[in-house]
Image 1 (cartoon, rainbow, N blue to C red):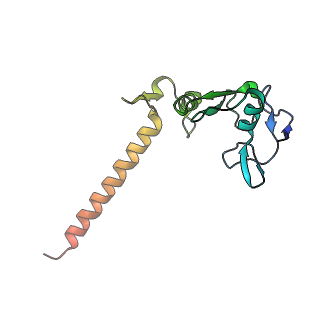
Image 2: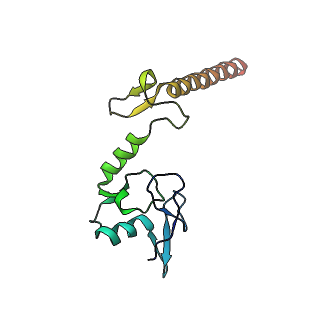
Image 3: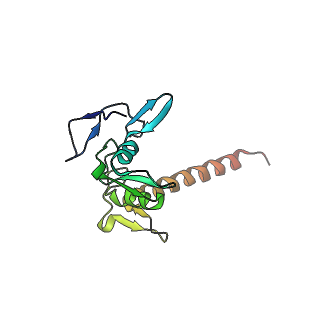
Length: 142
């Protein structure tokens, strides 16, 4: 497979795949009806086969990167652990740090601000349902 890269635009030393990308942002190419992920091909060409059941982790966290020195073979568990550890903010943009960070018994990080908002909304929905039920019970003929 020919390497299709573009000049680095955001990550130092990354080789950014300039061809087609998956919806998740990984470079890919279809050859004779078979789709290949660009980072896996780049790793195999530079370092050899990927062991069965293993994944390629982008050490640079850039899914479009095909720089072999940024790619490492890891287990699924390790890849997921690294992805979670690289997230410094919740999806709403609040930091996973200080008083805003809550760790569950299972070790998952939770944003206190978002958790409080969800709890508040849940209580409001419950109060609204209870109020509606009481109203309907009043209206119901006995």
